Amino acid sequence: MSNAKVLEVNNLSVSFRSSDENIDVVRNVSFDLYAGETLALVGESGSGKSVTALSILQLLNPDQVIYPNGSIVYNNEELLGASPELLRKIRGDRIGMIFQEPMTSLNPLHTIEKQINEVLFLHKGMNTQEAHERTLSLLDMVGMDKIGERLNAYPHQLSGGQRQRVMIAMALANEPDILIADEPTTALDVTVQAQILTLLGELQQRLGLAVLLITHDLTVVKHVAHRVCVMRNGKIRETGITKQVFDAPQHPYTKELLSAEPDGYADDVDENAPDILTADNVKVWFPIKRGFLRRTVGHVKAVDGISLSLREGETLGVVGESGSGKTTLAQALLRLIPSEGRIEFCGQSISDLSGPQLKPLRRDMQVVFQDPYGSLSPRMSIGQIILEGLQAHNLTETEERDEQRVVEVLQQVGLDEGARFLYPHEFSGGQRQRIAVARALILKPKVIMLDEPTSALDRAVQVQMIELLRNLQRSNNLSYLFISHDLKVVRAMANHIIVMKQGQAVEAGPAAELFDNPQHEYTRQLLTAAYTAAI
Image 1 (tube, helix red, strand yellow):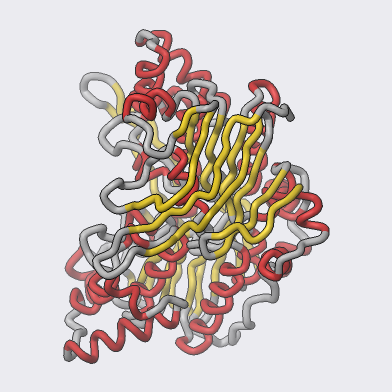
Image 2 (cartoon, rainbow, N blue to C red):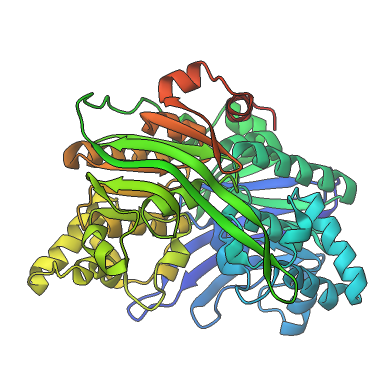
């Protein structure tokens, strides 16, 4: 690690404009960042980590944000209030950024190659052939598979983890001095997470790259960060060398974070409980079309012959690496995408039902998506978003009663009743995830598909969310289809587990047996990556 200071944040405060009074979200934050160093900002969802990071590059809406005081200096240049010309030179060139939610950061109308090339055209002045070769190299560097096929893909055609890798490639394209990584491994399974972190470590050593890491994953922090700043309610509560903070935390909140760990196991399910969702030989194959006539030359076998059953009150965990087909399987089971094979819900075959025929069942089949920002309408208040399901199924009552139901479900997921008057962009990633859970709960469904429901939450809030989901399951006899790459969370939630790889189930069985005695080599690899410190 070099002694050269590349970034200096002094006494930074950030407030959001409001019609009543300004809301303070960051309060007098100070830290330095050195070449070759990784500095981690950790803390619960809503603590001000991402706002601090976005302020460095002045990426917050100037009409909505105020900086009451503070200074941000990069290589002797003041960035707070800097000219647009200076910021354009620095953004993406000298300071790169990996955003938490890649689906909202990538342009849905442009291919992956075009988006990476654009960075190279703008900052490096490369021609088309040079940019193409550099893009191939970058995608290979971040471990993208089937690179030739991915170049012409659009963001929606990639998995969450694949999109995150594209964002990392774009951020590293110009070999910047500083990399701001906002939850860079949130969407990645444990094995790919280790690969990406190793890659960032290698690049850091080779380039002298300074990394500002924003994360809630304390395992990552422990093994990659040189120093750590612990944030809560907009303030830095503790800072120091990582080992010292982990071995001898001083602040009560730091101690709380370090002691929080998903524990316990799913409640036993009555062996006579009826099946609520079953599937037999489900397949989802996407055609690969090429040539002028767009002939089908092959298929991407996203889901390839999966069979399963989910009982009342049970949680079925689906785990596997990014791109293994977990989310595609869940979408097929809930008939959100076409599939082959037989699917039954509450004893009724739904494989061949059309949209209008499925609508009455939708109340009982709800979804919490991986990316809450992309699934919550930015034009609707939180109250309107949560109430929308009741309106769609003609379940509204009086205005007063409907508002009471919204308040009740917000409180169930740990949000203040005043949240119903705000909009999605006014919340952190973790808070938006809780809003998505509330939207599903208000309909009192029988099955909820939870796609990475805790991935955006810090460990302390993860524990709270797991307990919340358990309590809701007990009180409502809910069944969960629980998709996650976090095996510690899956172990705490699931009764049965399916391990997927390349569209197939390589292993399935009771959670306790699978964790204690995994049979397949791939399952053993996942468990080793999750429960050892080999990062």
